[in-house]
Length: 426
Length: 197
Image 1 (cartoon, rainbow over the protein chains, first blue to last red):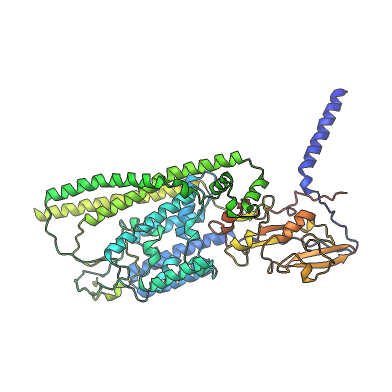
Image 2: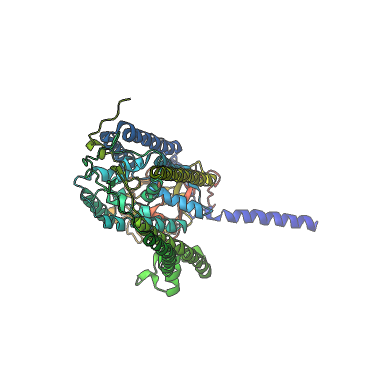
């Protein structure tokens, strides 16, 4: 009998426990039962953009890439590239408001690689991979007029001026650093800095913070005189495409047949991406060469180590961008986010979560550790880039013809119009 | 001899180029493959967890959309249809009229409609709502919490990284599957709203 009673009590308790989970659902003020027969309206919840539309974007990307590649390699038509640029500005720019974009997809990929809990959308993978594949086969046709950022800058490059070679080399290191930082911040789940500091997305959305609007306007203004400043001196995706394009299977050429060294195309490139013919250099003494390469061989590992050491000593500063680390530091130092007179919103919100301060500290310490490792890698990477740039400067590149520099050529097809050579009749 | 050497050099360079090409192809393929294994074919959208939201007001300013894609949603099922609505009236209001000075909403986006004594229905004009959450705070403090902040999925651009997420002090915004894009209470049939009685 007692057993039955016990079971009954347990059963009752179970029901009550089940009830308490529903406590939040009990209203303070009961919902009225209307005598006038009023029917309660339904809550409207507008649906998100359909999934198939995301795949439509991928289809448009592939179609646009195929078309522009055909324009550049087969038709050798600058006009075609121009109209494709206009299309990219309208579709990927104004219609899709600069999102989804291949440049930003770097961060999704980095986050997915380093973070187990993150599920990357298939479209982000495709937007990352497809332009790389096209570049591997046909050069940077994506940059030419499919990327909405590149297309916009390409169109406004009215009065391009040449940039001094040394300046181009020095500024050319910035994209590598930007890429490294973007991967570090994305991999630690801190921030997507490429998206946050995208100078043109505000233009496409017709809406930006004042700071980003000024940056975007500056880029456009500079872009009139120095063609594609973002692509050449900042774009992290351009780094990847530039490296891949060096090994491209079928890159565009300036001349449709044999170069006659007429020099007409010499100044046609707004990006300084044409390799000029160079007179054969007198061969250097073997001892000098050997000595130089031994020196560089020592210098590169030293640069890698020095870079890692230098940046890792700043890992705490880098980690401060992370909101959790920032919160932990504010609580630890009792600085209240510099807010005087009341408690900072972040701290109030943290207290309402019921998480203990110790838990927060250990989480933050974990993230700082990740930043320590990451900053070693990033510093080493930057050191390596410096070293390889130095080696690249010492290597003598011999050219007999005018040809596009596969790494820096954006395949805009401007130079083709200057070439007087007619294609050979088959 | 010289020409032969030259030819040899070119073929070596070609070989290197070809092997690099293959390496890149395999590398990209491997990367894509490994990513695809942990990807999802469906779509993820950003949404606010109403249980975590503290109505700090940053949704109004941090969203890349102006006005914000965050709107106040009304779960009518949870509403008490109160005369003195904590979400509609300023605290300490003198008389319960629709006069502008009595309203809590800075854009007057809530309309108050008389149904029958003593019940009033409150509707939100999504075009006017800026997602500041003042009404949500008021309703949650005094009423049933039927007013809730949610991201309107027809407005949201579904950014790569939601700009509000970075500024949200409560980490209330996360990715949810697009098949069930709203996290507010009082929407789903499996949670039935009981009266106190």
